[in-house]
Length: 492
Ligand code: ATP
Image 1 (cartoon, rainbow, N blue to C red):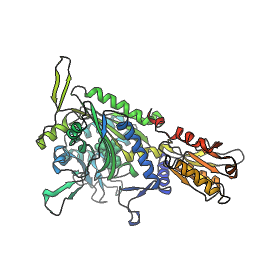
Image 2: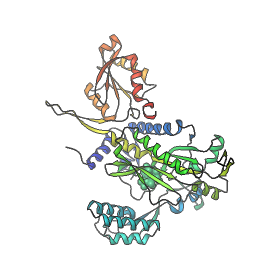
Image 3: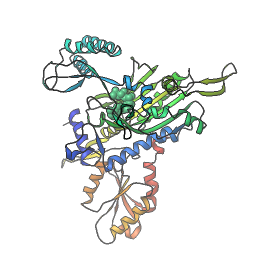
């Protein structure tokens, strides 16, 4: 029987734990809410996703370079960026259950329920009212909407609510030994600002010419009011961001370019195209003149994986104002009138993808229960159909038995392959069982070494997706494996 979306999602979570992809942080102490650890296979998969992004964005673009900025930044950075004053979520508490909610989320859930019940007019009206209240930062109005639409706490079932308050999502800590307010620093809530403050350092030291981009992968921290859906919304997570600096006036052209380029990056992984969609923002942040989300259809609905934002010259202008340092670029290319473009603050197109959401999407997409039943018997296998370039382990090497020199021969083959491909060696259990375990973690190739190997230097190679087995010469292995796992397959 087909699984419901809920069952499918639970399956992904338990699979992630069972095979060492993702664990709850500090699990032996009952866990820390919305914080997760990546296990032995998870960290490999995560690294491969990072590599895919880094190669596509940095190494294959002559005009994009990568940096690795510190998590701690001068506190003024977050004043300039607007995060100290504006990085808030409206929250509301239920006095009976003592549970805290995001006011906008309660309303969103109600809108979804209206839509499900066919009350589209009511849904549209509430959406418009909520958007207006959020734009005006009218917190009492949000509370009124919650009351008017008779929204009850899912836990206590009552409508006994506190006022709506703003809650800043940044974590702060003390810097150095002094415990005074002026020494308060923040854990960065996004990686982007590390790029903006280094704009001139990179431009000058790298002799970069506009248009050019600066990319980075790194941790970000947000004290999310409600954290849910596994690694979808975490308090510590990782972002892969790129800021592309362009001439004012050319921003819309580059926005369109990056929108398409980023969707292509996602789709190269072989995902069903219908699982992705753009969600263009109607209501824009104060600094943006265009924005879209790339959404993926998770088991709990279409949700944002990546944001593409046209941020104008907002960030660089703010840093120029707050730091007192010029953030300008001198463009000596000639414009239509034959004159140099001269000095200006560049406009910025940002692409910002959550690594953990991409990881979750990848697992959800890949995990399947394949029916292998024949008229004679029912059978199935758990398969992680990861793109071979992303697979944590590329090759598993099995001696058929633990004796007769087969383990030694298997290790000799592994020694030839391990510098280029992540390999594992396994001699326990029957071969069939070993194959199934590798299917469940997405290993594209299994090699079996048997007595014939000792005579004619051949092995059996078994392909994950088709389960097809072939007898091939050891000297052919490298080429066959390389042809499947190469980044070229994804990037060219
Ligand atoms: P959301 O609306 O889902 O909170 P956002 O619009 O605040 O996301 P951005 O600030 O645009 O997100 O961040 C860029 C990307 O970072 C998002 O597309 C998402 O993939 C990822 N991201 C943001 N917040 C989290 C989080 N708490 N946990 C995991 N990933 C996150």
